[in-house]
View: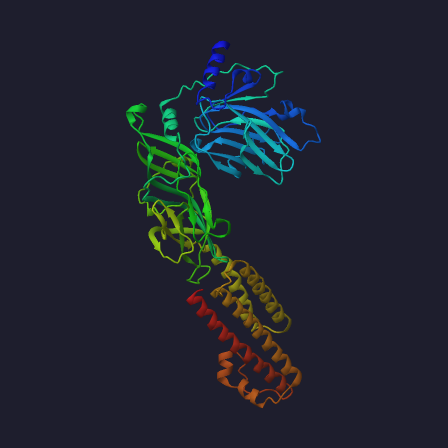
Length: 573
């Protein structure tokens, strides 16, 4: 382009209101130029120490970074300041100018997150005015961005300030930008040329729709948001009483600012946007969990894949998300639960729009890209959504709407019914319990050392299982299976007690006339499987009578506990 033509043009515009920064070609001809095409990608990194005037900073100076830049863009001009030249480096500083359709500026400590400072400034960037910028970072942690010669328009403070070594440039969406950097009179730069954008119908449509659009403002007259949750799988933690859900939110709403005439844009009736987050490009419904657990209490940021129709109707499906909500199992039937849990949702915006369950099934994201699965410990039996409006003047917060304060808040309640696949628990719990109980029952038929070994083995199994159950069973009530294990411990103690009585009888030899009558009874001998001898030899009289009476006690307890065992098995646990 002819040098004199540009110079005359810059002189002409310097006297007009449009060229408000009065940047001339003389200032730009000694700068290096870098063009950024559409798309969010930091492809080239420049070493800070090689740029003037930053490379002349004295070591004793408190300044880490002092750069002068020029930018020409319509919106979404991004600067990345990083300690390394790796795109995935974190943490970093990301400076975003003209974000949200040229409505706000932001300083971030990580790409697309962790904002240190945000300032709303509409129509900040211009496609005709080259903006001079000064970026400064001090060792004290102060960060400032200013239009050269003016006070900073945005500042931030980072107590753990980064040692910046590299800089890179990018944009967002369909926006393009032209950067001028390394500006000093000993550096020869390229010639300033306007940005020539050969936009498609979709790109042109997006530019027109997003120009001046503020994604932080709820759409005008937003009366209804249709919302549901496509639950893929769920897991219930019985011990701590919370439900973990994994799936996708789907929503539909009307945004009047997203309407266009199809004939003006090549007949396009719809456009698609990917990974639209909170306050990014367009307004999207972000949710608040009223019964969320720990980190999930409150807002959950959602990334949507969006389809916008020419009539302003917007259909959106979120990326896969996982969150936890509190849920108390009132049935108290661990581990054979059928649990009913509720997920309580409100819009995380200053709006009184009504949430209505979205009954229509649709999938914006292709089914082939989904990772749905139905397996694991829990099986989803049923899900249903119920919409309600809480109207209570005593609630601790209100909603600010165009009509003032409102205490009516729309809540969407998603009821999830789960059934545990309890085969694993059935085998894990039943086999040790039956085995330990059988060993205890068998101990009533044996004597001395073998009896002690059977009881010791049963005691070990029962205590080990109780310790395992203590890690898995809920602790706000005592499950039935824990009661059975505890009762089995009592049976072991009963077996050891009868063995102790037997030893006492043999040692003390008490008055055994009554014991002899009981042991010599025909019915007792028949029922308890004793010898059918009518009399005892004199020399063995005391010993035999003692042994037989001890057997009567053992067999009595055996039959009692055997009946208990069969009753518990029949009833189930």
